[in-house]
Image 1 (cartoon, rainbow, N blue to C red):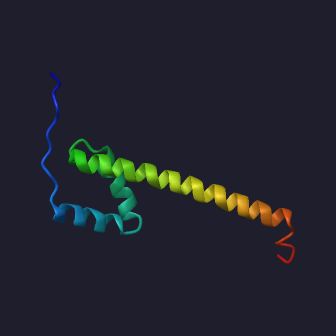
Image 2 (image 1 turned 120 degrees about the vertical axis):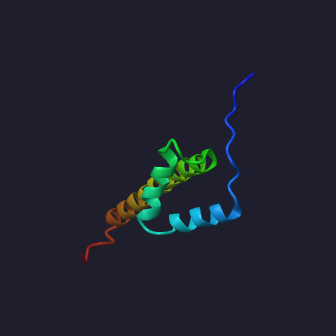
Length: 83
């Protein structure tokens, strides 16, 4: 048999507070790392924080690629001649 770790269920209030903290600029970003890599964090919050960091990284890379493509297209078409 496998030894499964059981964690207390996070209440609705816990999730609302967690989400509100992540909405605060920079504080939320830092807290995602704290919750994601802390040994004392609730495993549910830990997994959620790691997933949020992965999604943030994917979104950032996609935005960067889109920006480079649009900027490169504008430069190639001469769209910034007046600058």
